[in-house]
Length: 108
Image (cartoon, rainbow, N blue to C red; front, top):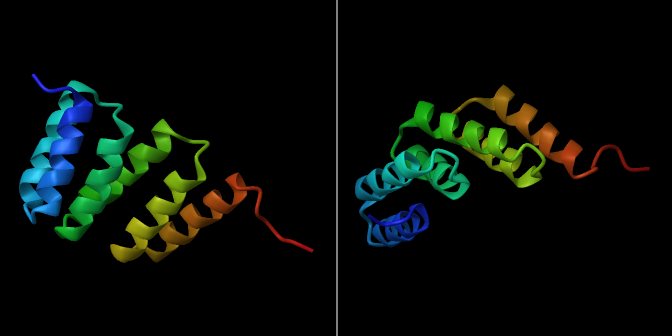
């Protein structure tokens, strides 16, 4: 049985070969083995969005922010995914959170 990291690597190869559905299936296998595998959730957010599975894409991007609440990139990715899925208010909220975590606010 491959490890979650090995499944993630296989998914990346499948994506690079243009086999997006198979890549998603491999990442879902990784999450069965380790539901907290951040890289798998992060990749699924992107891959699902590209496949038009917007609800799944957003759910995976949100999961990344739950697993890594102090990581500004998690919220940046959520913002991008929301924007691409047409959820502009959610995208703006996520970007504001990313900026707050980066210590960015108003500069004088």
